[in-house]
Image 1: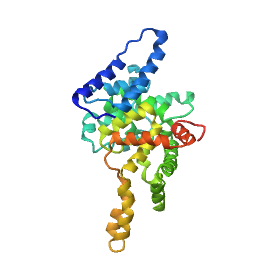
Image 2: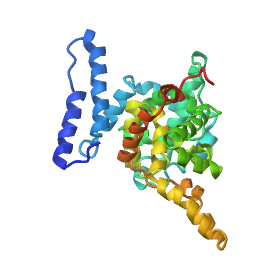
Image 3: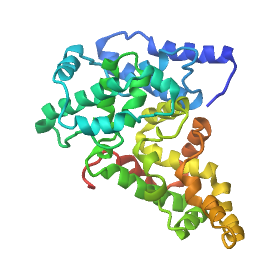
Image 4: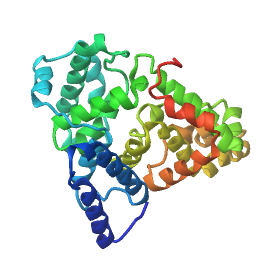
Length: 330
């Protein structure tokens, strides 16, 4: 991704707008035109990044295209909202008040009642659709954090709701089943991928009894949205929405690799200090470092994740691609 001058950012914004505003010549060409335009958007997201500071309308428009969200019926959304609290409202309220609680910009733009309303409506939507779907959906842990970027990014609750629903139901449905099957599958895949791309780091963490289930659960569950700052999360989500949420597993590994030296050094600190100072032993243990990842830096994380794809065997990568949504392996 390019990090550029105001002039080049403006030029990039113009290029994005040129694709987004491209007229369609006929109905027969519409599908092909959309697909070609989407491919161009993906390439530009990877190479340039979305210059949302220059044009704040770009990200919501692009996300809607990537998610193929065309129908945003106000009547449908308002009908769900009019039903009031869903059957798991208490569970929702137990989580929503702490959603991205340390991010002032998020709190200023997204009120708790907006989150509650969206999640209530999502539960009602799937209450109506449960007989026609292979998978059922209700509110589960982490869904509040997955909804947060949509409410922050989209210009209306209506658009946020339909984008969130499409995202959950099609991109990562197994991540929000009551058993969190997709999340646990992703954590197992994280261990398997790490063992291939960095066997030394994998072996060191295993020696410390640290599997991905222990240190990476929040990052996999929330697609890294639990690691601030939010502007970097949104940039990472541009990439995940463009190329697939399965790549989040590699993005978590990328974050590990960026802090690799510090993690590996913790064993030397342990050997040096644990005999005489129990507190220093706790301070230097790798789990303390891994409990809270350093602030997210989207560009290097994405760059490493793309490189890691080439290091994985084809069958493992195929399994990684399918793990958020394929039911057959449950």
